[in-house]
Image 1 (tube, one colour):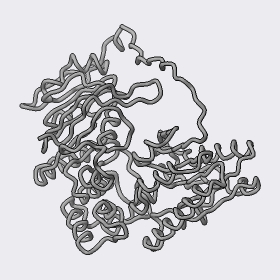
Image 2 (spheres, helix red, strand yellow):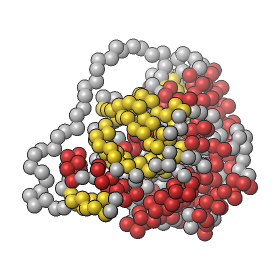
Image 3 (cartoon, helix red, strand yellow):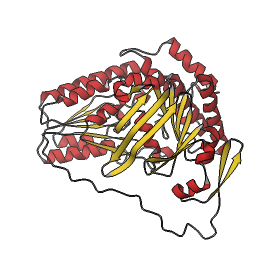
Image 4 (cartoon, one colour):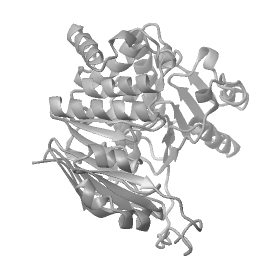
Length: 451
């Protein structure tokens, strides 16, 4: 039986097609690697399986269509190790890995002894037990990868998605992480679907390889059949030699004597959008998500436009407060915007997560009342996705409240990793992508720029 099936799955961003009717099957217990040049659709395919991106076609998990799986059931079946995970520097390793148990807790449940024992056991198995009390900000690259994998494992999901699991690691740590995944797959009978840039590593560890190009699967099969010099030259425009290592393949780049191939690179086709019949909407829902900077800032930009139109506006912030008070608050208050900072700081800095959860729930009660009242033309729910993704607020209940709003109430939602349910109801959804962030290089967040 297939653990994962993609049936004619397509994903578009405006006029650009990212995935084009992709068909894919991953057998239970198999390791399948997605390869392909930048922009081929590897990460998008993983996100479609995880229910993180709107798509056409069917995604089936263990025989059950994705749309029939609730958020909790999906999290119990599928765990994802993202390429650039959010690692709050002040959170301890144990606190972070415990987040993987969220799908198994009740609505008001808290982690128990069995959850903590499982976390300790998993960390020991990953040779990371000595890191349990260490803060995430003090880990090396290899240690961080182990911790992120530990969080995925304590979900007890049968399917693990790996998005570039060896990015930013040296060759020793690359081998260490992938050998660890291979051992866990064997012992726990996991199904692994990975997106990989390193062709040699894909050839060494995967049972099968699928080469994506232009959003389509162009070659699929055992590594020795897919990783050929001809295929790599055609789709990567790279000069390589492919060496045989028994049943496995090793891809070695070779220098071109006369520079890049003489023929000009073919442009990526972009189809012109079909004409759309325009209509007026009484109100819109906007979702700003992604790991890049600017989600809240873009929301505040919409607030400024609304104020200029004499709209009545309310901003409800779910986590930012205190020393993280944003610079926009002063200006907005001066312009007559109703502003509620109901959060108690970033969740991972909380000294009492139970109290923080109660604060988040109270904030949502206030937000629901503001939306339902019909008294506001625009409601900005800033950083709403954090309490949703922590399991404190139910995405379906949030979506129902937004969908049932009075006709002229516009809603803007911001925050990382917006759940599929919120993306589905959005009229406009934008993903901010982080290319570089000063904080990652040790630069302290600066007032006037960062907040």
